[in-house]
Length: 596
Image (cartoon, rainbow, N blue to C red; front, side, top):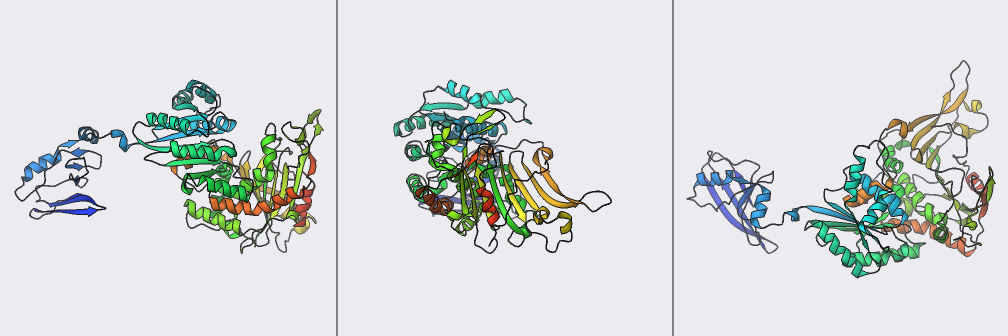
């Protein structure tokens, strides 16, 4: 390495070698008289063993000078100056030196394993197109679909094109952008356990990568029983030789602590922890992403975020439809494994964690793990399970869960569950965290409800009657649908009298922001490409989460606990209300709320 300095002194020169890890590094320092001034942005490098670049000056803008000879005491400074001022572009320099120009560029190859499945068609490919439309994908990228189905590139593009849409606020050149995107999509048919088929995929990927630095992302949109085979084949036969290789794994991550640990151990035979991206798409939801911003960047909330002011926290997930074709898969897992152990528990950990040292992924995940490890083991008496039954409404008959042809007629798998959880630490000691999740309920929603304590000695209690819950402030974070954040407050109704009612201080996203909210998969795919891990689940997080639910799941199955049956389209089992009442809590989603 050489450095130039234009100092007002007589020329002096030095020349030396040093060694780093056995490789020669040549250093060259020159001080010149005032008549010879080299631009500050010039850096000089000289040929040394193993360096195919010849002597020259590399400019900050990428330009390189012509050859410069080592300078002795008799050097002709004028000639040296002319040489330095004769500049060649970096591209021309590489061509003359015999360099592969593409080596300095990188490319990302995204392989969707299980490309013919519903998740790939409905979520993954549309999310990738949205990223492309927004200009978030690298300049050089290739998308490959991989599945057992026989399909041509054209057939894949036709399949994918049916699910692509442009954002409401981004309609310009939509058709043109779709065509450009589809030209980057290709297909390779192969078995998930065939190293030969993955080696053929590897050959195709290399052709598209064109000698560039290759980074590869594999999205496993396949059943969990074939995860390991696919990971083994991808790792051994289709990993990048000179860049990074990452694998996105979809839930479920096992059925209990034992199977989850076995899955993690098997994955780590072929991948490091940094290569594994366990995706929970709920962590990519806009309102979940905003949760830490709401808390840590607003002074009014953080001081209230503790047992001193918060009476209970509710995490509610409901769907207004049944299994509808997924009965076979769902019956193997049930609502607790499908929703509560991952989606809701992850949101709880983000909600309840202490302030992280930084926004770095490891700092955030460290705090989440601390919360999960502080939680009290879940007891059977703190869990209510239910299963929807047939119900007729408005002349329409809705099926029972066991009417699904893929579900055993005697199935006891819960389609509804409610649970009370507790965090045994200084901040949350004694505060019930109530979870509720179910299918075939009266509406579709996912929300966080924070109910604050009653105002001590409230002067206006008589205005509300005997029901003190009517005076409770409540913060509601509606994750979906129709995203919103609103705070319920007590307010005087205009007029001469003193009549109070509850009003909402409301941030309604659709009204406040004209920009369409990105799908969760867009954010998570972009994070995986960029190596951002804070919204992905680490193995110790997974262990801590399963340790909470595994004992009660085993007890439910061993004792063959019969679920409480509730009508399709209802508010769920009555037992959920008794569970909440035991901790002096009323479910916040049951009252009639004013539209927000």
